[in-house]
Image 1 (cartoon, rainbow, N blue to C red):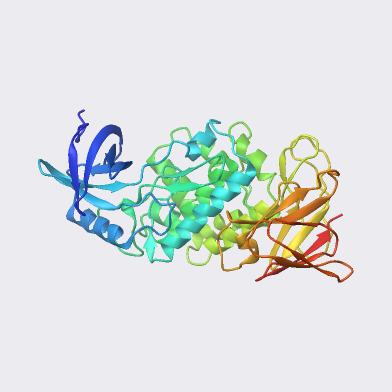
Image 2: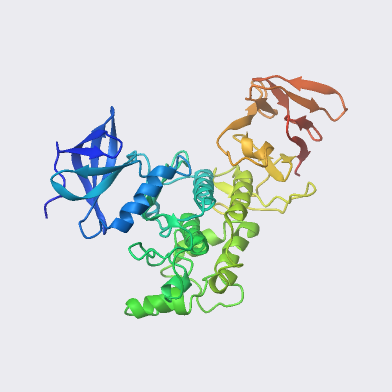
Length: 440
């Protein structure tokens, strides 16, 4: 099958720019994707098959181009494209860098991101869909086929944004979603995609990211010999049962097939698992009130990242079960080698509790409740150059902090300077205050 566009072919944009096709990348159900060059850099071009290039789809694209992307994580349509000799149209969008991988790479062990990276990527994905939903838009097709993340940094990219539409608007030519990710009410043919169905698909995506498994695929799925359309409708639509439903054990993971689910479910703290339980129990039957909102996921994910500590023996990441009130912790052992875990200090800032270990970081979202910025570092743990047992917090902002020592003496912490961590130390960061306490 020949591609629609050819290398070296010039295409024109609605804004008067010219792009030159470099090579064919791939094709999907709606059209073909190419790499192109123009305005001094490379881009991605999607060109629709003639039967997909409808007037309705074009109106959707025109609105998306006019409105712009919700944030930088979306590979958003930027300009409409046309070629004089070819019917139809396409659009230009940013080109995905090769460092970004998808969840299929994770499932096939082609990448091995840390838990810190996974929680970072999950937070960015949730916040990105939140920004989209706040515009009154519905993504319609959240799945692991259209999200990518950098396994080293947790940065994310979201593609296939040409199906985004206004929430609760029935668009005949638009997609309903991806099998296994669609909400039960869509599978049953009762409702069209909406922000509520997006929330269900998002929960599926997050479960895949953290468990490398599907939350509804357990023994009931493996008992089916022919997994055809009626069988899929039963598992995902008519009778969906969460594999870890606390009140229904009939669909537990099959130990021979669903090993990932059994392994990873035990690793995460209960407060985090409760959000999945809600999503796939009450969220299955009550789309309006049972689905976990983005704000809830963001709070949980930041709390999860705050609790990461390294095993002193095997260096595996663990989630320390730290109580947010008081200074006691639940005795824990490493999930990988069974070594006892410990942590000396924590800092409480507003509603955030962050473990203070080597490598711990304080970020903008910790000191600013209105911020979703988990990448801007405002403080980091430092180690005394002559005594590695002594830890401090380094001010990496441009503003000084005011610290109150346990003896009530005050000290200014200038940018680039450190202050020794001690039980009872209070730090005024400017718009938030924190107190350091010993854990055990």
